[in-house]
Length: 85
Image (cartoon, rainbow, N blue to C red):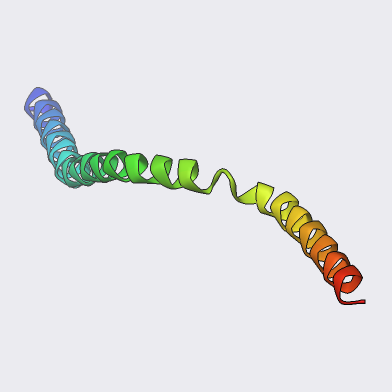
């Protein structure tokens, strides 16, 4: 009789273990699917971002261009002043 009770507890524990594993798999499987979709979307977004990086890499040099333009403008104003008297 004690042997049957010990086996019953084992089978109950085994059943609970299987249920827990099934619940965990049911919860993790959709998360893995979402992670896969996010990875694909991130890969497709990386290409346009690389093009944006290439297109905007020159922007830090606009300060130098502005300085040169101001120097040219100052020279033009000086030349105008010299010509008009």
